[in-house]
Image (cartoon, rainbow, N blue to C red; front, side, top):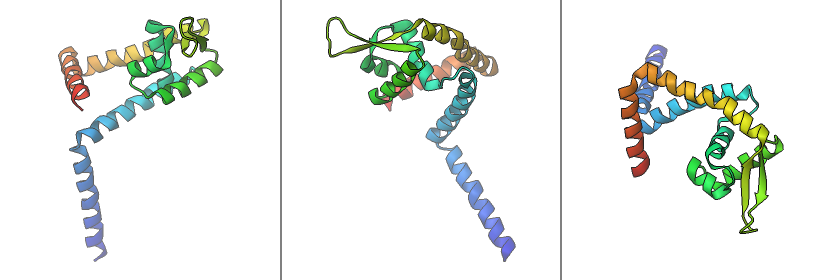
Length: 155
C-alpha cells in the first residue's frame, strides 16, 4: 500500500511538471528567472542589480529623462523606477535635477561614475546576447525576437 501511494505521488509530481512545462507563461518565466539569476550574479560583482542596469542603460541613450519616460521605455511602473533611481542616487550613479522648463518635473541624469559603470557593465548583457545567438543561431534568434514582439504587442 505504501508503494502504491509513493507511485501515485511521484506520478502526480510528474503530471504537475508536465502541465507546467506545457504552459508558455511558465516556460518563459522560468527562462527569464534563470537569465536574471545569471545576470544579477554578474552585475552583483559591481554592486548593482539587473533592474538598476536597465535604468543606467536607458540613460546612456536618454540622459536627462523624467521617471515616467524611463518607466515607459524600460517597461516598469514609475514607483519601481523611482525606487531604482533612489538607490542609484545613494550610490552616486545618477542625480535628480529640476527641469528648467517645468519645476514640477525632475530629470534623471547619469553622473560620470554612473556613465562609467553603465559602459563597464553593458558588455555583460551584450555577451549574453552573443552567447544565446551562438547557442541557437542567428536565424532562430531573429525568429525569437519576432515572436516576442508579437506576444508583447498582443498580450
